[in-house]
Amino acid sequence: MLLLPDFLNIIYKKEGESMKNVKVLLASLAGSIIEWYDFYLYGTATGIVFATLFFPSEDPTISVLIAFATFGAGYAARPLGSIIFGHMGDRIGRKASLMLTLIGMGGSSFLIGLLPTYAQVGLVAPIALVLLRLLQGIALGGEWGGAVLLATESATKGVRGFFGSIPQLGVPIGLVLGTFSFTLISSLTTEAQFMSWGWRIPFLFSAVLVVLAIWIRSSIEETPEFRRKKEQGEIVKVPIINAFKYHKKDIFRLIGLKLGDGFFNVFLMSFILFYATTFLGYSRDVALLGLTLSCATMIISIPLTGYLSDFIGRKTIYIGGVVALIVLAIPYFTMIGQSTTMFYIMQVLLLGVVWSAIFATQGTFFSELFPANVRYTGLGLGYQVAAAIVGFGPMLWTEMGAKFGPSPIIFGGFMIVGLVLSLVLAIFSPDTRKITQYSDQHNGHTEFEENGQRDAKKA
Image 1 (cartoon, rainbow, N blue to C red):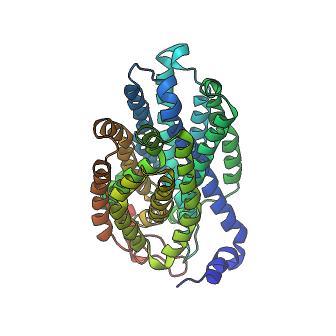
Image 2: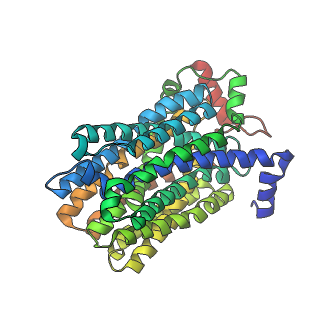
Image 3: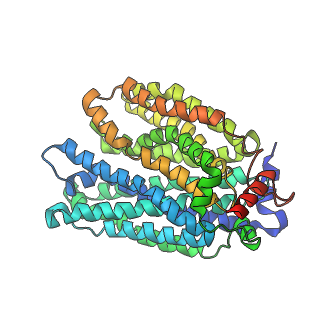
């Protein structure tokens, strides 16, 4: 068992690597925060602003459906981003790819803040909004995998799980920043002012955050794993072809593993704002506070779970988290409508504790399935295909809510179906803490990495 003093010694004292480790973790986290701030900022604005200003309709439900379709479009674009930036990351390097994803995400978010509304320019407004949302999705499709690899491929032996959990903190921190910015602006403006110009401020602020993140990332080196592959001449010409030729099984395994918790995650972190205000009758402030509390809890639970995964194992924690979500799915939908207190408690429990435990392990767990020369592509593509599927959950749930109301059986049952698939696949997945395709810098290459090298030579 890795005790805390040993853990801290590995991170901060081993071979004078303290500042390098801190820089790597800060760089992976900073960019991830900005990317998710921008991505979820759009999700927060979807039901509150965009449905009214960009997709007006006599039927409010139609407006919301169309607005959430554009929200899903960002998810649908993520696989394309994983292929584009995965190719670049596996051919040129992780660092170069990650610099471009930041520019893509920050630039599109800044431009959203400048867009005219439907009332001002007609159809041009929603078309421009959709195009910028697609650019957001493409950028995020390349960001997530790269940020994870920046951390895990720089980790020393025994702390990969912890390192891999750090970029995952970008999700709760980015969402808290996004929702806080909306809440702050909303409290400082009237409803008319907020809908006129106040909502634009958080999007425009993205430019400042992106400049800061680029400055931080520009000071880091390429990851040791990628440098080793490049020096050994094992960079493949077309990573996507190699990944499908030799690692197709793990790509599809990853998609299935992510689907179950992915649907629940989109609900808990995005759709809950619309669900709580429309179907449960809570105010927007109550819904935002519930989401903020659960995300604040994640900031503690994610690195703690990442640390535990280094001696308990990613697979064990993953299975435990999925089982807990299955057990709590129907009780969650039953209890969140009873009172604001129960709403806060269940949000913190399911999102802040249970789902965050699953999410904390995913970056390391999934990346350990692939060799370094196709790792960016394989990891990103599998994860983002699943994200593209679950991103359209809000459209389904809007229809479900309109037809059945906030039915715990309907909504809870929907979540359970996906979770059972993820559970079965997790049970039959390898324990990647023991069987990994990462190279061990102290003991040479693992058997699985050598297999990956042979695959590369064949390609």
